[in-house]
Length: 267
Ligand SMILES: [Fe+2]
Ligand SMILES: [Fe+2]
Image 1 (cartoon, rainbow, N blue to C red):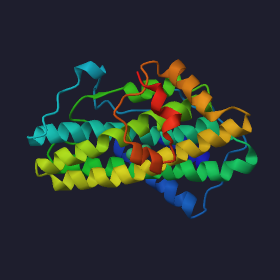
Image 2 (image 1 turned 180 degrees about the horizontal axis):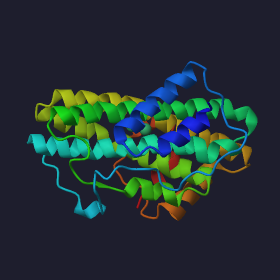
Image 3 (image 1 turned 30 degrees about the vertical axis):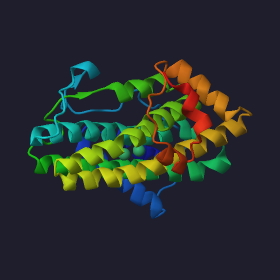
């Protein structure tokens, strides 16, 4: 078995719980060194990962509102984040399948190790939230979700630097900006349990943005491109709305993102 085959199987698995379990298994199998990297012949990678019938996908503007004072409100917030984590599992394993084979051979082992770690941690994040949603009586799939994250993936499927710019360095970095406030609000309404889960996720997401930043810079360097200019180029081309303030400069700095890299790219 290769890591590529396991990653492709994860993309092709519709059930969210099954997808997350396979993500955890791929990470532990890779750490236990029982997987090789790629098969002899690389199969084509689907543009969209398989998904279950639930949750129903709605346009972002039609999503239910979140009032955190009630259990339903907290579940609505956690459901939206669980859906992001499910997409993040697919994004990490899509990185391996879609872009891994073209990474120079000397860089492939580290590339695979980094992205299977991200995929394993996303699977853990999904599982934590899914378990919590069950406790709150509103399991994953019982509310609608939106498809914005996978639309961003499709828009960046043609270029590894476009994908790295938009998925980890715009969208996951945005998660670092907004999560501390969510933790604070959950704490203020007395839901320490959910707040603690978001704290675990937040701490690991700093690592994901860091992995994205490292690979973005490294691939820019191997292609002889300036990383600041390349990031600005792909943000304006693939994320024309621009970046949203306010930024969490401390978390971004901890992930290796300097202010000059992103601060001028606001909407
Ligand atoms: Fe995550
Ligand atoms: Fe992540």
